[in-house]
Amino acid sequence: MNRRLIRTAAVAVPLVLIGSLAACATSPAPGNTPAAAGDPVTGGTLTYLEHQAYTNLYPPQAGFYPNGGIVNNIAARLTWQNPETLEIEPWIAAEWTVNDDATEYTFDLNPDVTFSDGTPVDAAAVAKNFDTYGLGDAERGLTVSEAINNYAGSEVVDEDTVTFRFSAPSPGFLQATSTINSGLLSPETLDGTIEDFGAGNAEEIIGSGPFTVTDEKLGTEYTLTARDDYAWGPDSAENDGRPYLDAVHVLVTPEDSVRIGSLLAGQADYVRYVQAFDEDRVEGAGFTLYAPQTRGVNNSIALRPENPLLADIRVRQAIIAAVDAQEVVDTLFTENYPVATSVLSSQAAGYKDESAHYAHDPEKAEALLDEAGWEPGADGIREKDGERLSITVYEAKPQPLSKQTLELVAQQLAAVGVELTVKPGDAGSYAEDTRDPLKTGFYHSMVGRADLDVIKSQYFTKNRDVLISQDATLDELLLAVASEPDAEKRVAASQAVQDYIAEQAYVIPLFEEPQVYGAATYVHGVAFESVGRPTFSGVWLAEH
Image (cartoon, rainbow, N blue to C red; front, side, top):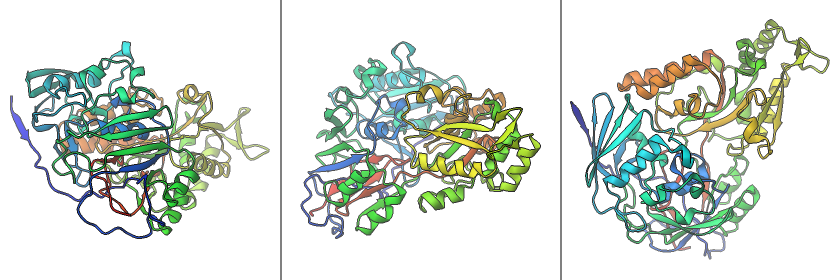
């Protein structure tokens, strides 16, 4: 079997990252006077305010940003995706080989790497991680990772060498080994059920990363405590050893005004989820904003064709033509939220400009609805055969200003005779209704991942399936993205998906979604992984 050696030399790069929060801040006006750069300072506790409580730390469920913010810091990965270059670099794996059709990957591991309980991160432990994530365990509620395709199994070659095999080409697997969905946990931790990874159990999760979780108070706070023995960070990281900080004290702070007020008052050092309307206030007070892009499927509204009101492509085309994404951005957001021109971010692998399909044209929208037989009723909402053209959508709590975004879209649709009802994201019926296209014709979401496979994660019927459709053609196109070993052909496969989604009028792309953070200027070494989750190992606090 022909094999090609793929070893990526680590390249020293400056990490442009966000900072921590100094719980013991003493300066009268934190953030107003930039701290002088110098050698990193060891010690101290960062006070970090998180917008939402985490829900589960099983790595395949770490896509929810509060989950991923923890997993990213407690679980090392086989490889590291450099957030500046997006190249895959060594981490726990020193080197690797991949066969020509991407059905076999062999990794040689660095020695002397341990989990936080002192047990070795050896080939057997790594194999158990990927057997769990690649195959799942329905009895224990452990789902298959959406980042891993066509997984067949593992072979422990020797103590420091492991081989993974696939039933069909899996060209995205190397990048998958760098994601938080593939965070390496101890075999003992992996013996648990999905409930064992849930809220309240973070201190029991044994990882391989630079921090452990301590002092958890359910739903309100926890501490990331530095591991003194950690010495195996990626070579290109600013700090590849023990974290500079002693700890990161994380407080769950849902209220925007409290998060931002705490930062500006010096009670917090670093916050996630600075809303667009607070950006000027934060920068005006002398603090630093960071807005790393998520590089995946854009913030979008899926139009579910299984809903009878949306089954006619002319109706879907009309709805897309009626929505003005530029007005959404200009009204609610900032330049950190570029208007989307495809379902994929312009920073995503395989992106293709589909803006011609998404042009705002209300006259076209009205003509299409007329053609489809929908006539304006007494209140302006269109009707056909006694039924109103009335669609429901739920607010998406993880998405920035989702309620306001959807309400503005509803106004735009009402102008052409389409009624959109926006329901609250905390409604008791949310989970059930959003999986029923008859009850929820629209679905608001996004997903970040710096790999071509991200488009499959969002739309494939056995992954997130946000369209809830039975479109076999779309599934076939998505499978091609996940299984084409030739790099150029794989990009073409992704672009074919983007073409098809645009032609079928399945999605309204709105904007490229960043993660926006604010930090005091005495916070240095701020860094993120490739789709915007904070990496705390290189963060340090200057005197202030």
